[in-house]
Every structure is written in structure tokens, then in C-alpha cells.
Amino acid sequence: MFRIGHGYDVHRLVAGRKLILGGVLIPSEKGLLGHSDADVLTHAIIDAIFGALALGDIGQHFPPTDEKFKDISSLKLLEIAIQTMKRSGYKIGNIDATIICERPKLSKFIVNMRENLAEILECDISSVSVKATTEEGLGVSGNGDGIAAHAVLLLINSNSV
Figure 1: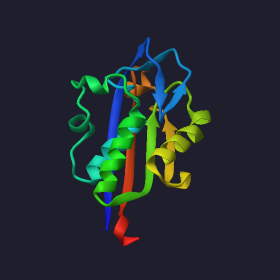
Figure 2: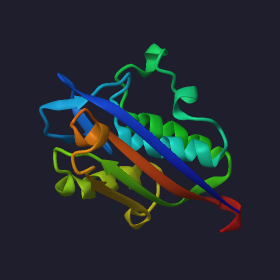
Figure 3: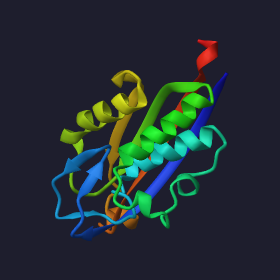
């Protein structure tokens, strides 16, 4: 049995915050504003996992009103989502994610993001695709106000493999 999930997240860029994507610290004058570390890539993947399992969204599991999630690494939140996924009897088939960001340029950080995510997801790096694109100066990310990410994933029933 297979399940497909889609996740999306967007956060505003602001001065005085670190920019973390896929658990990688990216040199930048601005970072993403959020209750946790605001890692939009990891948040989109978490949302895709919960979506595939029909368990709601990231905000239901890690509400921004809960102080225990204040400034937490999104990789820690992903670990919790993975435990939920495993208890439900599934494992990662593959993930395809896209970061939408005008700047900074992300190409030299993509491999590190894939490595971080594959380790947490307990899958081979070949099962984790991360891409980056721009909006050609249009929209929230195009005008430099924020960064967004989409993720699509396939979950495989652990008992069917």
C-alpha cells in the first residue's frame, strides 16, 4: 500500500534571524521568521508526511502557541513526524522538494540538505530530491519578502515490502 503527501510552507525573511534550510545554516543577511527555526523545506516535508497519513498539518502537531517548540530545530520536529509515520506502519519511498527563493543562491548547499534529510528520514540520499528555483522577481519570494517550499512524497507500507 502506498500513500502520497504534499506539503507547502512559506515564511517571511527578516533581519536578525539565521537562515536554515534542510537543517543547513545558509550565509545570509536575513533569516526566516517563525516560532521554530522556520526551516520551510523541512516544514513542507513534515506537512507532506502528516498529509499522506491524513493526520492534519504541522500546526496541529507543533502549534506556534506551544513554548516547547520555540526556536526548536525543525529537524527535531521531523524526527517526531518520522516516529509517527513508523508507528503508522510506513516508511519513505521518495521525496521531491522544491525551495522557492530568489536569493541567496542555494545550489552549493543542496547536497548537504539532502544528506541531513536522508539521515533523519532513515532513507538513502537517492530517495531525497531537493531543488531550488526562483520566481523571476515575482511574488513573495521573487521580491525578497520570503522563502517558500513544496514537497511531495511517497510513503510505502512497511509490511508490503
